[in-house]
Length: 591
Image (cartoon, rainbow, N blue to C red; front, side):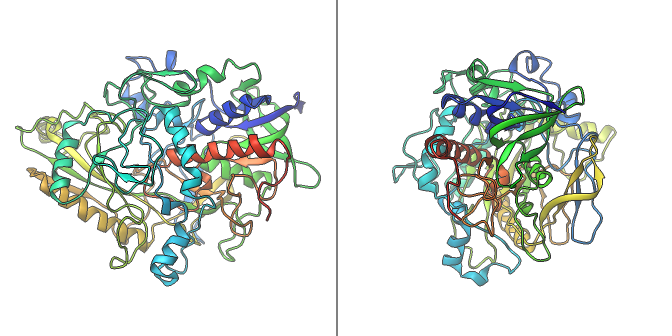
């Protein structure tokens, strides 16, 4: 084994949270090394126009995604079943290369509602403990909205997020989200201009008595220079966000917000093609000494470090903690253990809205998030759940993110799958179709978790991660309620026809259908080492010089897209490291 020169900090994974930690800790004067399993990627030359606008290469063949032939996960619906490998991308998309999923995200940039961070205690207080099913394992984050607000703001100003405040220092303002927690200042950029489908949706939602507002978007609406001095350009609504890098330097990503500065720092280094296989521990098992990785030549390399930041994709974080023996693996039979606990996903539904030819939608004019409108009346605990028998919720979105001809073509019900009638329907519908989507939360349950697969291994001979997951009654009720509200808004838009997609009781989780890449949990944060793997600063309860960032820390999945909360939690953790941990290394919270 090769042994490298020690560094102060080693970061595992170089997407959003790895880049944030790299910047924050180099600015604290530490020597920082980031290890990325993929290759280096930057806007130029990797995402330049026109070759970036290649739906077959990026949208279908997944040019930016992790090769599943080398490493994947296995999936089963229930305990006792045999899990099988996820061999073709469908349900969610693993990013790889520098920037990770922060390259191919859509830019939806939300803050959590205050009650989302204290979800268990809030719901028990409002509805009573018996309102939740016995096998539901919702928990609090251990940090409040007020504590996190400055760091949510910091991430928005890094990204140049476009939006309109609905609650500015406690004052509810027209045109923004009236349900959001109070923010100290306005968004750094005004909203991206609405597309026509979003305008029709917003008019219909207001007619139904709701309060639509522009979707918060990390697609810059105008030229913007962030606090690091990195400049973003205005979005041109090209329709190539999800699954693609941004050739306009408009969508916030590590490449467009941090790396132009971080990569020039003398105390920062990046090694690509470096696949970390474990966090190394000393003979007490209570302190990390660095990591072991496999380099591009297939050699095992030991990298000593005083501080280890596990900053990979959510599922990779869980797998690395399990393979490293940090924290007790979760056992669904006893409910004991913390690593792999509380895996959650999201549940979506949609209403496709078809108009006659006199309504020109022009769906190719779109962005991953900018230009759409949102109704948040039924998200989080913004409404009384008592009569409805479920907890959680989601937002309702109107408009379109693009009109790519393969993946985003919508056809009326009854259209044949091929032939002349299919061609005629595609021709007649393409320019006159938009959508209404719901984006719903998923709770954590005792029987939904992640562990190491006993059978399948990756290309290095290491066990794959195994997912045990299926829908529960709470989520079926939630999505039915949300979809009914979405259908009412769609009908108010006066279309020629609509079609509805919804998961109903009895429908199993189907890996073939893409919903979101918002997988969460498995290394969750909380107030106690008995029920969580991390404390409120995302520091391991068991090994104090290991911090784990990202959506793996979520105790359950909220109705919003997770990136805004991920960024806020990462900045909160980074400040605790800089201002407290470095002065006196040790547990930041006493168990």
